[in-house]
Image (tube, rainbow, N blue to C red):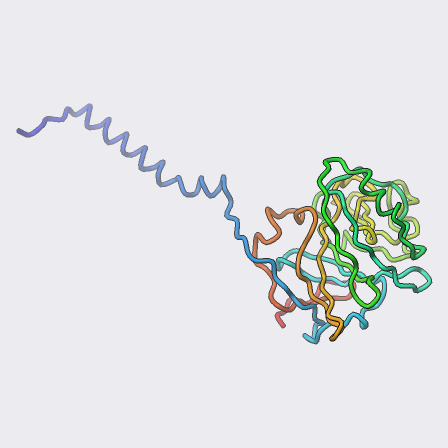
Length: 265
Ligand code: FES
């Protein structure tokens, strides 16, 4: 026997199915909004090359210049520096345990005289706030004075050239002024954060409370060539993870005091 459906019940049923259908239709975009897609890739091993695609040799790098390159993502900018004292001596950068967050040291960088003492290294750790630390690797190259850092500021994300290395003798505007008055700091012009390039980019002046992530470099002493192989420290500013996005290829171009040409080698 055929079941009779009253007109009012039928309309109620149609309404319920319609609302449920609309909700299901909207579900994927809502889920995507709440959980943005995270594309996690492998950390690349990438050789540094000049704009003509020839390999960068450590001995070709000029001291105290900002060499700019993208790593590990095609949109995450970094600066490589070959540190030298004002009188031309290479500054050997030791391995150091760095705090993940810290109170600023508010002191000038001590490396300008070419000597980095154990006390200077440990000063950074004494100001750690959360207790989380990580190991920053030593400088590379024949003199152990080649280093690289993310050039996206850990405060609010200002990138190179706002955040860049000021060589010895080129004053950076810090608060207090004496911290960057003789240069030798990694400094962000947006709000004044300064970092120490010789101590794992620990914080010298606020407002940042986090060191800059460090790019781990590898040096091939047989060929004098350089590779970027990893990132250590806080997550790169503005990224959900250091490999969330499109990673760079096996060769990455560097630019001298300017962003490199966007090209594949
Ligand atoms: S973004 Fe660099 S100090 Fe604020």
